[in-house]
Length: 443
Image 1 (cartoon, rainbow, N blue to C red):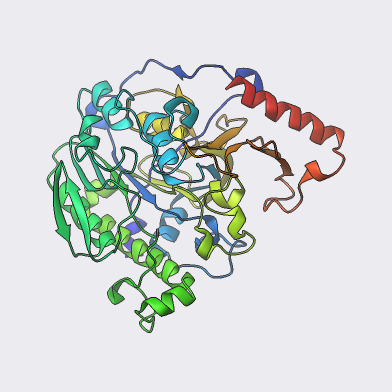
Image 2 (cartoon, rainbow, N blue to C red; image 1 turned 180 degrees about the horizontal axis):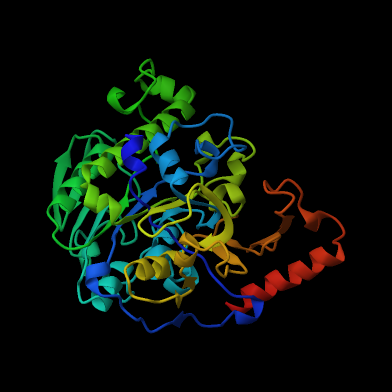
């Protein structure tokens, strides 16, 4: 499988350029300069649900127990891995940010289950409009930005084909309800396998360049044993008592199964398709509290503004990604996805709303990089975790709505062990604190 993976390419996500003086009160939109449709690459954009750095096999130093991920490892070996990619602490706001290029305080989506208004322009519709429908577009998998009752919600945003589930998770990976363009059916095929089957089938039907947004449910709970054909540990028990006693092996097995199925999708493409495809893989938020591993803790993982909640894997590989086996430390955030995908689609923009394209980093290590990243967490019911986080190259500020603040020098304390606000700040730290507060004030 790896020999096939090494023959294709991946798509990248997003980076922001600028300095503190470039911060604006309002988001911005740049007028596009489209590329002729004959030169357009395919796009396969893959989202893993609840996957932080601590279980990712390609990244040493975090988490003692890794999932087996040969497909993702091969993608990383043939592309760029962004280690400072920031998302939101939960899934819906990250997805809304990527779909619209806007921060959550602009869209109103700040926590899981938040509803994105139909007045928002999503990336699929934008690409269609700006390229004169040069792309075939589909969303397959988890949606979770439109509540639970509107079965045609994705189509309402201008997405021509949708198949998956609209809520936060399936109740059972082997027994769930699938919604396809407004129609529902019961499905007993393993969820990850079903989404890969449908993705492969949809791609085979396309005659134009395709844009596949593949939002997998794995490795989100419920923790379970995947099909034995997809995992290496054939002795893994298949009973709820074993899962409850130690869910970590099941979480890792879900990642391994996901990795194997992603590999199956890639090799299902023709050689010509693979060689003309940009692949993106990323996690929508950090690892769940039940399976978080040191140096992260349950209180500093998913649903928190600490690194374990907001710093996730991002891999870009494929067409026009000339940098290979690169670990890129440039800061990237979820809103950058919109501009990056539009840029990859030949629309010719470098910025959009709250994001900036990181496409230049696919081939140029010296490309301009953003000066800060920002994320936030809020909902209708106030939580002790509600607040925002902002970081520059060295320092990170977490400000909770209850007034609590944390300041970390990530360049020397990447796992947030020492809150500098607990002591006397150095002149450097005080200056950075003021700058980070100013960034927030200018958004």
